[in-house]
Image (cartoon, rainbow, N blue to C red; front, side, top):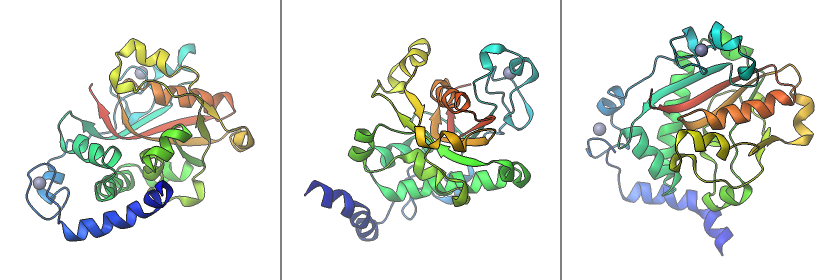
Length: 246
Ligand SMILES: [Zn+2]
Ligand SMILES: [Zn+2]
């Protein structure tokens, strides 16, 4: 019965969406989940910080200083974040309704936002250089409980289906990062991500785009980048819908 419910949920959602029209999460005007004027007032980021020191850096590439650090050898090479994540802001509300209430229309809106901003803001020459696109995984039990992985859904909207591969799996269920302070977040994700053994051969010398929904301290993205690089990936570019703080 539960399985049927999970299978039917996306269809039920569409029917409910039709019967009960949406209000904008920001201004509450009826019509769309995010109206045009609230969309235009979203705080877009300019993609210009180094993933190591968070100082300005063109196109979000690791700065010279950080790239010379041994400690950063296995971290992200690039960080692209499309919006600023603010508690109570439009992006936070859309994400909450999608992830925790399972309302697909809010997910559609976010996927649309991510793919549109990615296609507009990342030069095509750089995007074409990416060999593989993957996402931050959930544990199997969490994924089946939620019915989807939002980061996987975001990766699916980037219009490069031939590059999309599930490369990582989560080795353990740890505490939600949002509930921890900065130091605890680093230890919380240690060893929590690994490359699927059958996929390792694909990674040698490759440039991988790693997609996630929200980043704060980058601990999760860096732990995933480490797993990918230890399996032979040459470079790992992080792409998040929104970045909190800084
Ligand atoms: Zn609005
Ligand atoms: Zn730096």
